[in-house]
Image (cartoon, rainbow over all chains, first blue to last red; front, side, top):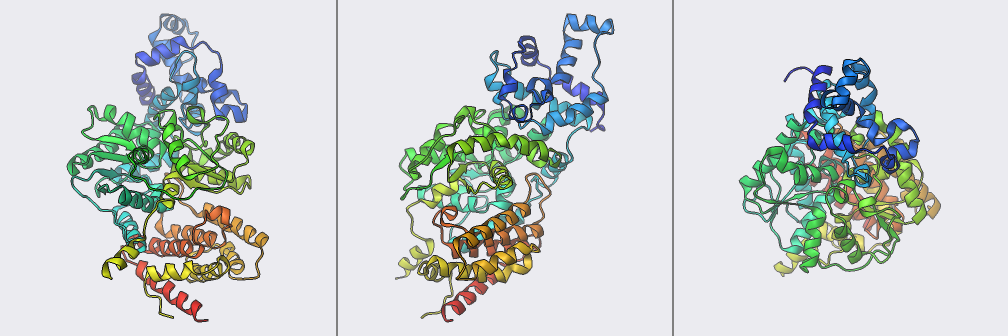
Length: 431
Length: 151
C-alpha cells in the first residue's frame, strides 16, 4: 500500500463520487435543516459544524471535475482546488464533530444521505493521512490482532472461565452447527463482562445452542469508523468465514451500534456477496424469544426509566420497537424522551468519536443535547443497548453530576429471568 | 454453622444478611484486592462501606467517588487496552457496588456483586499471562466470609 498523500486522498474522494453522491450534491436546496438536526452544530452554534459543510471538499471536487459549470469556473481560475490546507482544516470536522448518527440524512427534505457522504469522505482523509491517531491505532490493532483494543483470545477464554466458575454457565467456543454465533465488542470484554453472563443466561432459558468463534469473536469494525473499506471488508470477511465454517444459522451482533451497521448492512456489500447466515442484533433476537414465549421474566423495575436509542440501531438498522417490547416486559414506569426512536439524539460519541481523544471537548459540548432530554424527564434510570453509548452516557452524566445509573437492556432482561441458580440445579440432581 | 466452601453456600449466606452487613462484608472483599489499584478514593470509599455507622449521605458521596474512579479507569473505546490497567477499573467497580444505593443497584446483592468485580480484578491482573487467578480470589472470599460469620 502506498504512503498517504493529499493526492491519494483526493483520488480516493474522487472514487467515492458515484451517481447517488452526484445527485445529492445536485439536489441540495441549502435549506439548513441538516444543521438543525446535527447535535454538534446545535450545541456549539458554529456554522462549520453544519453537516453539509463537512463534505464541502468532496462537493468542490465533484463540481470542478464532473459539472460543466464547475469545469468552466476551474478553467477561468474561479474555483479553488482542494489542498493540503483543506485536509488540515476539515479533518476535525469530518472525524471529531460527526458521529455518523444519520440524523441529518433522515431529516433532509430531498433525501440526501449526508451521513453516508461523510462516511465516504473519510476514505479520502484516511488515504491522505489525515485521520485521528486513536482511530489509526484502533484500525491497525483490529487488522493485526483482531480487536481494536488489542483483546486476544486468552482474554475471552478468561472471561468464559470466569463466567463458568461464578455461575456454572458455559459459553461454548467453536460449537459447530450452533443456532447462534455470538459476537462481542472489545468494550464488553474489557468493561462489561456482565453482558456475556446475560447472554448465557438468556440462551439457557430459551433453550438455544450458541457459540463464540475463537477465530472471529470481535464485532466492532474500525474500518467503518476510520473510513477504509479494505479494512472494513477484511474484518467482515473474518466473521463470515468463521460463521460459515461453524455452520451457524444466525450471527448475533452485540450491544454495539456501529458493529451492527458494519456486519448487517454494509457487510454483504463490502465482501461482494450475500451471507449464508442471518445477522441479527441481540435486541432482535431477544424480541423474537419474547414473541415465541421463550423468555419468562418476573418482577418489574419500579424506577422511572427511559431508553436511549443507539443511532445505528434505530436510524440505520430499524430496531425501534423491539427494545420497547422488551422494556415493557420488565418495567412499570417506562417513559420516552421527547425525541426518541428514529429521531433520537446521539450520545455524541459514535462513529469513532469516542476513540478520538482530540474530540473530547466538542463531544462533551454535544452531550448537552442528551442532558436536556434527560432533564426534561427526570428519570431514575437510563437504559441503552450499546457499550459505547453506555460509557459516553456515564461520562456525560458524571460530568454533570446527574446521579443516574446506566444499564444495558440485555443485562436488565437477564436480571428478570425466572430461573434457578445453576448450582441449585446441580444440588437437586445430587439429592 | 458449616464452613463456606463454594459459591452456592456463599450466595446463600450473603442472601441471609441485611444490606448493612453486606456492605461491611463487601468492604472486606475489596480490601483484599485493594493493592491492585492506585486510586486513593477507593480506600476512602471502603472506610465508609466498612463502617456500620455510615449514613445515607456518606454512602451516596462514597458511591459518587467510586463511580468517578471507575469511569476514569475504564478502557476507552478503541484504545490499546491494557489488562493490567483494568484491575483498577474492576476494583473501583467493586467499591461502587459495595456502597451503591438501592436505586442504583437495582436490588442486586451488594456483597455478591462486589465479590464478582473483585474476582474480575484478579482475573484482569493475570489475563495477559494466561494464569488462572479466579480460584485464588474465590477461596480468599470464602475465607473472608467464614471469618465474618464467626466474628
